[in-house]
Length: 357
Image (cartoon, rainbow, N blue to C red; front, side):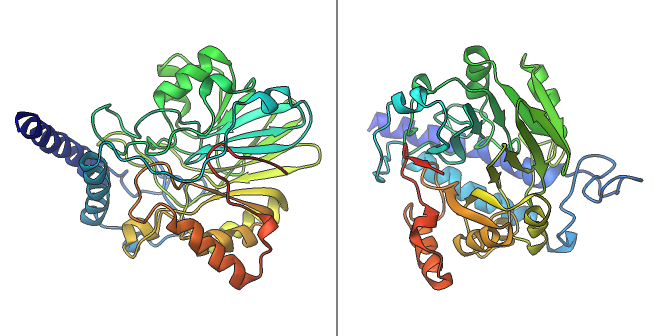
């Protein structure tokens, strides 16, 4: 009984702390909406905005807070939950021995290990136990990484889509920098965060800006989302997707995004893509979710919009979402059948599964 009381008190304190963070992040400090003169439409005098969205239709502070409180309460209330989604055994040996074949491996959430032309890179790497600024609360990982960090091949570079805790994990990037010394590609404003933690091999780019790394061209592309890691820095840094183009093949990594048909410009400018990695959760009826996240059906539409060949599902089955853990995949399969997208073009990967592309 005493243990249960202590646990309940701990849950209440943790939830109150989390609410203070989330309400602050969602409410307190979006940049003043003053477009920056002689700058792209997504630039403000302080921070950034989504140029494709009417500011009056953006989610209210209350809706954002309610959505995130639900996520945190679920992660606190079920601390021992393990989601038994199908997994693929992967000890990394084939990946470490691979010198030429193009492969993609889903580690979990938005973390992919991609091999192309003898190089290895990661998208939004996350091997942490929680997507949170603290270790006692916040969304907990319910599915273990599909590949142990220790089993990774050499990592040459990393792309980061934005600074939310489920996409930018402090412990993971520090470990990568110490072990593999990769180059990090980040959207505008994030380089300072890396410099502050002692990582200086960082390239910071705006939407549509590109940089080279060995034989690759790496381009930062638009996404419809938001940023912030504290109650005071909402939208102070940019959010983005990435295009990685080798000599013969290209990958589009959407990061985290809501649907907007204007994102089809990515395909017109830089496509087609042999691989397109697109989030399929969370989703819901409120603007707090709808504007910033695609539904499974919208994910497939974005895949078609940007001229993708193979669809890779990301951003599901790892941290708590409002849906049943396997629901997003079922909806993707149903929509793909309706759109007559052949199943062999759907890479609905298990944790740890590798596929050639």
